[in-house]
Image 1 (cartoon, rainbow, N blue to C red):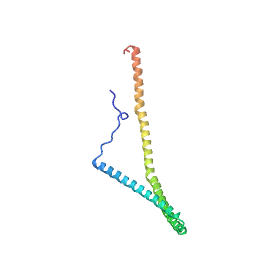
Image 2 (cartoon, rainbow, N blue to C red):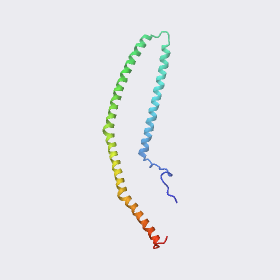
Image 3 (cartoon, one colour):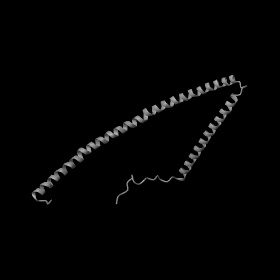
Image 4 (cartoon, rainbow, N blue to C red):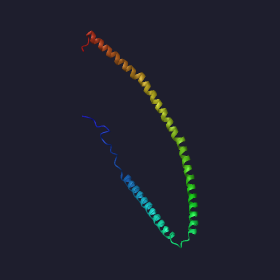
Length: 154
């Protein structure tokens, strides 16, 4: 009878508590609300764009004033993008700081642990495994010698 191993039997996660289920449902509800809001905003922007294009195509539209307003909007948008880039650079600096001051020491400690394990494996190989192999060799030689002398049957 073969024992089941972890490769043949799938591991089932532990059942979720009612609090965890409620939290998952709440997260799903929030995610659906966020997606509905984003879709509504996109539809509203497309509708506004369509209305703006319709009115801009009218022959009596004062396009010079609209152009000036558009230039002001683009300037404000450039300002917002500049602020976003500054925030991005600050976040990048904090990520680099995190990598240098927290991840690097963890990697160094892991490397030290691996070197210690390598030394332990060498020590065990030299002081435990080699003597056992030599002893097995001597015992096999002794057994063969006893068989040849006829003391021990084959």
